[in-house]
Length: 624
Image (cartoon, rainbow, N blue to C red; front, side, top):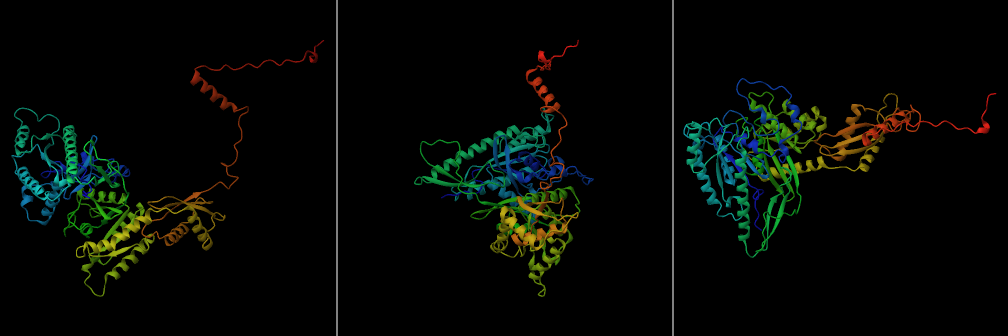
């Protein structure tokens, strides 16, 4: 009856603070690597061996790279968007948000980029149950007005939160919000002595009204235990307050339904469950009882493309809100931003906005942003390649991106964005889509009949874009992950052999015995033959015929050849091995038995002496 949002029963922790205070480093420290499976890939371990380009200035910290963490750099203002993931410290699990740096100049600035960054930070502060206000303890609050401006802005955000929460009955904004001051970059204990300027700065920071700060070092992990106690206390307080709100919400109802996520699932594979809470006077429980009612479909989408083609604008148009920063300036997006979205009753969407993929990176932040984009593509189900219709052609770099998607085994959908820039009446959007399809099929034949959607994400409404794009995405996910029965596959193989038999190899006829599907996502099949290999032309023919028969368009069909040797009686492995020793079990078997007895009993069985053969006295012959 009174439904909450997706994460209302989970503790939401937001990390705020001035630029270059170590927010992203603390975000990487608190991230739950096991639960946030989309941020970690085993293939990233191999990429660390590749020699990277060396830069003259300070580079990003390579310790936190390679597993999908937030980009860490000594350059202020590296983080721009609001990045979310699952966090864990000890046994406490929560939602974690990383934000852009806030300072006095940004709050008073009228630049569009600064205002968008401030809006994302505002949303993180509004939704949070616990705010970690991070400060650089080596700078303090007296040498700059950054911290003072941040605290004043935060107090206004909390007052705005209280005003908006009056109409909310059971939401996270209706609960108490806690602000904890964190003094970062305190490695070791060399700063803790009488007369230390760092120690005096920490004492002055306690006068801001948020209590005494927690001293820690995010990069080394010092002081994390004190932060764990604060987070665990905030989670217990939220559970108690939520149960109190539920018990006092409606005395006439016996049951309340509250949407919640299952905490044991991975980040983007959560089942949006329903909890049934029976209100009785004698019921005492530490947690709410969960009962799974349904398991909706989850589709992971990665938005890929070159810089400044409208990827972030497409994400905001699909969601119907300004979730990520967008603008005409190339290279605004750096981190891959994942957003949960409910498309319909039975379909959940994870939409990942990525940075523009470029060939030559001028600084290390761009290099890590491109790697993060490819990492998002590897864990996605469907990849959407966004094109710029104003270019009126398909670039070579975009073909390389499409080829990388196909080789990774993901389903591909192409969006021809910025159709409003095609002002020429003689060249319509349909002609542009046909030209892109012809160019794509010529260079990459396996992408024949790939869905191409022409649209304008800036001028079209969210409902129109969803109506034209999302059915194709859901259909591509279902085709990409389905499993075909073995009987249907072998009937198809029989028809293919009759229509076009395989060529002879090594002066022997090629026999295609049977085919099975080993796995889906991506669709992979195993073909048993009497030849070690098949010609590439015939394998391409099988893949093309398979795509046309079972509608596997926009993805790669992997057909593996299995050399079946069972029907060759003269093969060495099929022939019976000759005995090389005499006796029961042979000499090697007797030696193995003796070794086993020595290991188990510690005694060696003595060799039995043969008794002399006794002959019949009547048959004995005596010499005379």
